[in-house]
Amino acid sequence: MPAPLLPIRTECPPGSCICQRQALLQEPSGDMRILLLTREEEKRLLQRLEQITSLADLRHMQQRLWQQLGLRLSIGPGQHEVRSLRGITVLVQEQPGLCRKTRKAIPEAIKKSMERRPQIAYALLDEGGLFGGA
Image 1: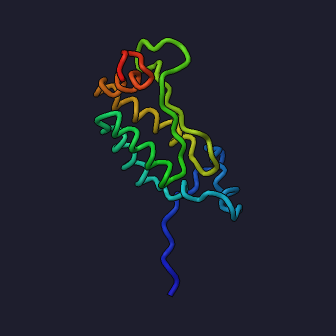
Image 2 (image 1 turned 90 degrees about the horizontal axis):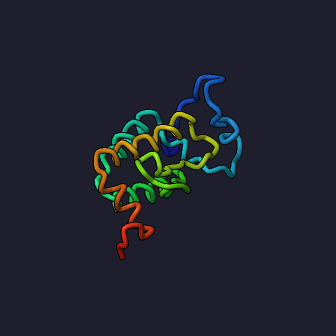
Image 3 (image 1 turned 180 degrees about the vertical axis):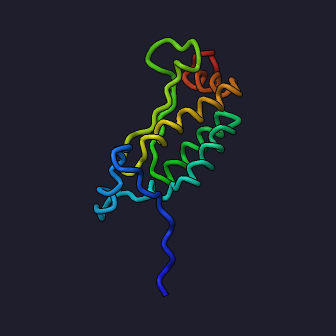
């Protein structure tokens, strides 16, 4: 009896996305983990990202995104002065199979959690020694 296949993300409507899902499916050596992020799982992920409570929790989620989905997430102070959360950069690296909307929604969810809990942003800035922390 063959093993059941895991559900993969449904295709975006033609012309609305540039995720290159079909090209990824046709490439045998491609990293297919991102396709495991179905729309339902994406909603759960975004809810979880909005509920982050600390910098350690954020870094843990960053690591889990890489392990489970192959998503590279870069979070840190921007190149210029940080006066508000707008100065903190949250980038999701482009990759085949990653929906454009998902790529935009992940940073928004992280910034929402930082707005609710500013201590996350302070700890993030202090990682680089901004506040003189160890």
